Length: 175
Ligand code: S3P
Image 1: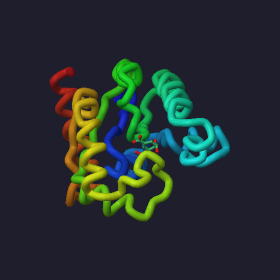
Image 2: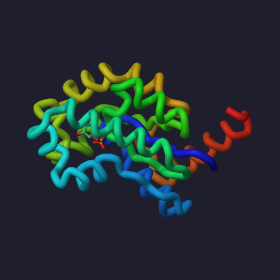
Image 3: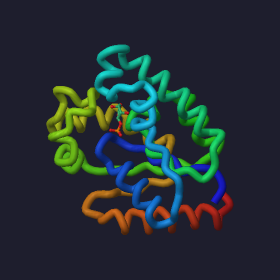
Image 4: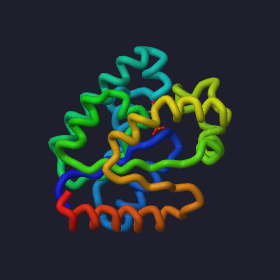
């Protein structure tokens, strides 16, 4: 495979879990965008938001997408908001395929309810709050995606199999 695989989707949809399974199964290298940004800044994601504001974080995120574009064969676990800027999506498409992972708001809530690391979800950790934010972003996620995988009730092994099949299918069709 040439290029990169970008895993996108709402917070808690399983991007990091799928990325690390792909690493285990196929020995692919993984870029965890949030982890890398946090390491480079020497502070947590909530602290970056609080200290410098969301725009600053989004600028760091965009710069990292531009940097990753020059790499090959990486599985990139993207931050949930990476699709908010069209320029990021355009750069990702230049050298990679974009895989959207989806999950129901109920599933998302279950996964994020005890997590304090997601500033965007502050005060929104209810099915209604998550649904509202998800709906506001839906169009952007769907427009960016080359492949969509619904993850509800699927073990990570099944998600990876489905992903592999769909990538192979695209390769056969020379997409
Ligand atoms: C965000 C998602 C987070 C992180 C930041 C903003 C978002 O990543 O980048 O808190 O706007 O959806 P995860 O999707 O990995 O939680």
